[in-house]
Image (cartoon, rainbow, N blue to C red; front, top):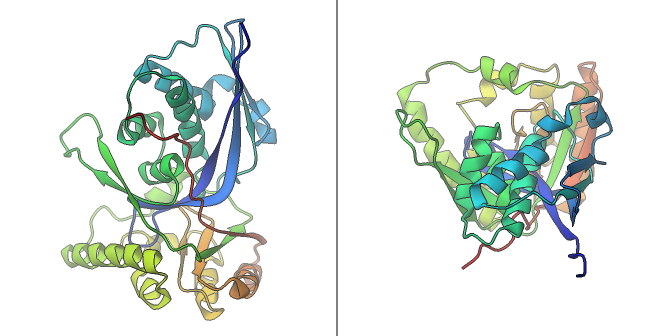
Length: 315
């Protein structure tokens, strides 16, 4: 019997939170991990991380791709008894807020979805991704691609988190300048600075601005996006975490960006523009702001990834 052909697909990097869309909005960015899966006959499950040179120092049993695959196989009744080889190529910078860990979980779950004969929904796979340690918004964009919102369906007293994924249209002409300062922050550190409560009036303003961000990204409305990326939930507190971060956000707007915000939990920054010709100046301005604060930053210029880890769901 002929050996099955390898399975190949891509998983995008992601930018979550998007100003007022804290915890619920995310964009897929065209900086993918390439996944190649081949069947084995010796019962071993091997994950080769060519995307991350430091991964060989870590316990392979904790690899997000492997953990996502194992959880997906359990959820979707996929037998792994014959073994698989998984090769991960490409680079999503770690510790920058670009969804590296969630991309790994999404990759493993997407492998199981491709091997399964059982019906599944993206929401089921997101609900499996989050308890593994993935972020709901990053996970949604990694699974589906494009612009996504996650709707928390479970009430506070429910033991199991339930999410609904909502894909939204996003204009083809958006360009994103990502600035990556030479510092890493843990997610716990970025959450620790957030206050336990917020003024009641901030809820309405945040909801309205979040809707404005969705509309602006769909229709390419730079003016609306600039107004609606203003946030009261997390940005005011995280701006102070890294020297030069706040100045770099302001510098991006002065250089012509239609707004800028922290990428995920940071410390990476995300600036938006509909004009490709502005990206170089925006990048220089952000790097210069970090340099003035004694930090070195690199930049990436990306567009939307209109693909996600998942294949088309079975009918």
